[in-house]
Amino acid sequence: MMTLDPQAIIIRLLALLPALTLHEFAHAYTATRAGDPTPSAAGRVTLNPLSHLDPIGTLAIIFLPIGWAKPVPVNPANFRNPGRDDIIVSASGAVSNIAQAIFWALSIRLLGILAPGVIISQGNYTLVAGFLSFMILINVALAIFNLLPVGPLDGHHILANLLPFPQSQNYLLFNRQYGMLMLIGILFLGSMTRLLGYIIVLPAVLTGYFLAGIDISSAMVGSGIW
Image 1 (spheres, one colour):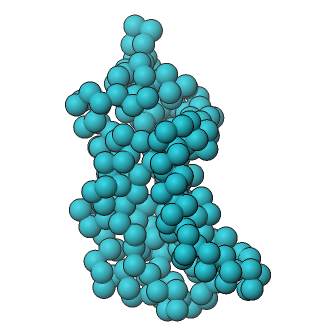
Image 2 (image 1 turned 30 degrees about the vertical axis):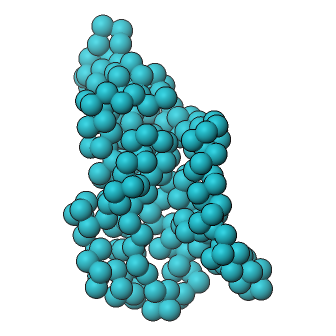
């Protein structure tokens, strides 16, 4: 359960800004490189967080183990290789989050070697350890969430391009009609049950332990962030 302590909320928002900003920037940058001028025309090829953040998605990540930013407008018809490039552009956001998680995990490991007191002080995890752990959690959780094969999330674009053409068209039609309803249902059930915990938070915590070598959930709880 996430704590609503003001300090913890501020720390989580500070962690959220680079995670969401780099996620959306990755979409915009790769789409532009693939030949689509749409993200550039919309002013989305930027590292300015204000260009990417969605108010409701930002609030959701404070109270729930999920969140989102404003989708980057993309026109796959402009891609040089539409099928391949759509997969690359769609996956780039999650890849950026995994790269960030690895960076923060390496930071924990390096600090644990060079300055162990910064991570654990008097037998307890420090605020620095909790913050870095949350950076890992939020990035892995965003990657998992966005790869769910439900429209309008990135995962449904990837799956649509991997399916044979007839199945792909039926899948896209289904997602256009019911994808948003399914996503709302997942979020609603997830907030009422432990569903999101099992499909997002638990895998993210286990991944964090593998990458950083510490129990990131204990670090977040011990430092008061979670």
